[in-house]
Image (cartoon, rainbow, N blue to C red; front, top):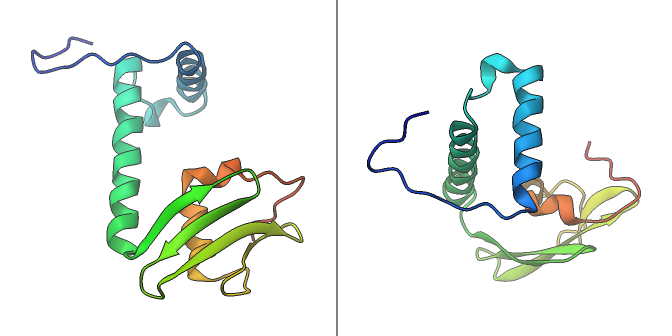
Length: 127
């Protein structure tokens, strides 16, 4: 791929590079028509996707903000209710302690966040 004069360089850490490279190679094999043929283009596609997801969350679910997370819970600030929702895994399902529900808007928001993968549990049944 020939870079334009406006292109900028970005450095990937030694831990990230092999993971992304392996995923790109896998995607090229499994879904070649949907995968950018160049590694640089693939990384650009991923970054654009992340930005678009963040923009979607900001516009479609306004008033929610992930303010913290650890291996056991996520904390979501709900500006409309002026409260903080604690999301955790309970009985193998995501659970909102604020709403006392497995299917409230806080749980749905949590499912859209990439940090959801940080929650540790033997089994999480999403549906």
